[in-house]
Image 1 (tube, rainbow, N blue to C red):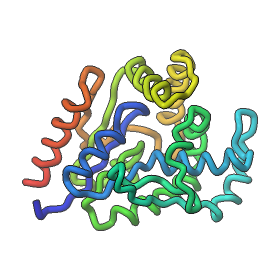
Image 2 (spheres, rainbow, N blue to C red):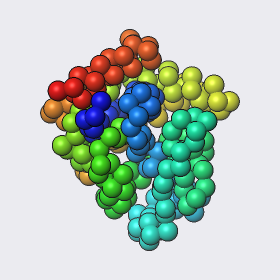
Image 3 (tube, rainbow, N blue to C red):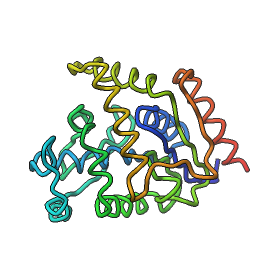
Image 4 (tube, rainbow, N blue to C red):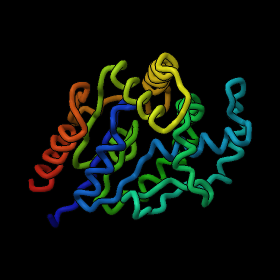
Length: 230
């Protein structure tokens, strides 16, 4: 496969975007970029500074802190993909906490945060051979991506997956809280003024409510191979 393409995977939270993107990148030998992890890392930084909390959201303070935030990926051969680093600290596990999930959509709605991270994302993917997942990859980051996928699933199914993931990691959470968080994130992601979550006109929608991981991967891999062989 000599032809290199850009693959953009967008969609709602907890639709398995990152899982299938990692699988696809590994199969094709492409670079994988989890843009959601980048927004989570920024959120974690701001939470540590107490700029973003359940009771405080200081946008002016956020803008002042942006020059001090460095986000990057360091390849971990044990897991087979690049893990997100915040100012040279591996925060891959900490950014997945429920507390971060509750704040990330608000931080992601700040235009200057998006502008900073989109610039990094475009630089990473400028040479193609990249699989990038997020909320606005096919509409903003790479509007000319060779293959655009839009992942969706029922709200309840997504909450169930997220709940199982958190419980499996040892986190103490309630399903009702996870479901409420999924619904809130959907609302914030789709209604923000800057780069809201929408399906690109030329994106292929995949509803994986009733798919297992293997079925999802096989479907996505075929779409990618077909595009590469065009």
